[in-house]
Image (cartoon, rainbow, N blue to C red; front, side):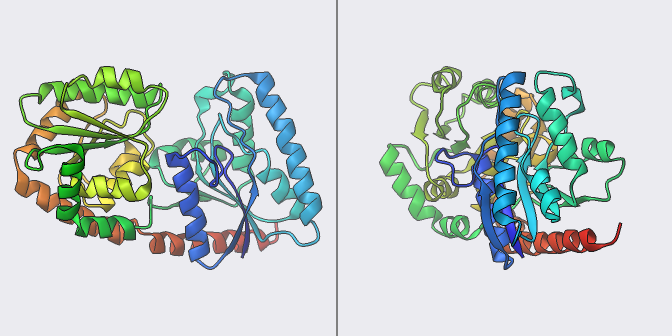
Length: 380
């Protein structure tokens, strides 16, 4: 099929890296791996972080004009399907439903979030747009189980909802895992750290809000295991770096690695002993999936999406969300048991290879899209 692809929060070729951009790119790869021809239909960002009604209305107008131009250009030879990745009240899709309706093609969305509590709030315009878009869908692909109930409540059923496990190209991480000893020796020399000490890795942007709250919780948890000889390796950067450094005030024990590309992150994950992330309000966390793909045992906050990636007691430990003491206890348990770390490392590699790989996602996506196309051809 010829597929028009759109990501209203951040286009897959946006200049600024993020987990959202990474997943958008992975969807492009999976769709193409399944044999579809995919083109980015629009790069318009509808994101509004301020809850400004006037700004949202302006963006709606811009989006609708963009949709009308797309319709005029493609009316004679429309795509077979429209695919929107990640829409929610701060970044709604005003383009896809309009185009799909005008051109008579199926409208499919992935990772949609509908929050009834936003009705009448600062993002009411975007909230209503998400509701309208979801009502127009042929299929809704959920990666995070936490999104399903509200969507089903809006639609009155869940018959359009389909499930897809979070996924990635596991090859690069698997290659890094096979080179663990070499990578650990190199990183130890480059950073001037003892390879015999426990290395704890954190991979997350430094932004105000939930990310900063997670860093602060991490600092409180690490304080409780300060007697152990760990070293913390932090990959990430952002506007809240000063606050993060204040939260992680452990002189001589923290190395800030800044923003890193995928190859460097895979190397870090493969070389480290434990990955930790409190995951406050986290959907599922692309960095967690990347870490497990490199065999890194994880200690993470217990969120519905995170549970899809970290299997408690098998590939890591889940701590109640917001519980610094539980995080500390889990980190201590792993640091005290190198054999358990090795066992979890092997289990993580196998599970990610089996359940979260690009080829499996491509097959599932292909089945869902063909189902959506067939359903749309049925007479009403």
